[in-house]
Length: 103
Image (cartoon, rainbow, N blue to C red; front, side):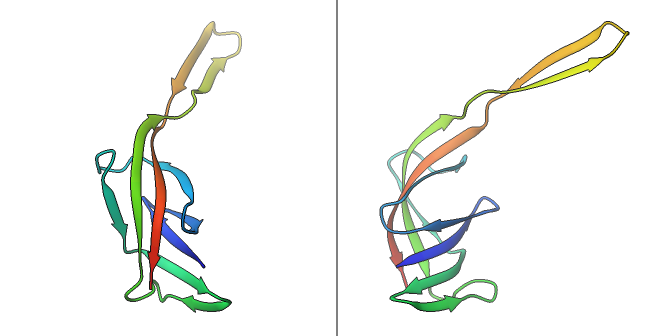
């Protein structure tokens, strides 16, 4: 059994027990969150496609921790002008674990 869910504008294929790193959620670490944006479910080969979401379907996820991703480096330079600049970015992430899929 699996489901395709939408969290913070991105889609993920999940099963029970899946651990994901998604963009930062507003929930505290250790809390549970119910995701109602279920786009597709599959149960024993039976596919249930939403329009746009599957009615009465939800996915319960546990928030494990909040963390920051790896540092991405952006380097800007203009040749022959003496201009160069290095900018770094670390994305705020949340690690979640899928507890159950409710149909």
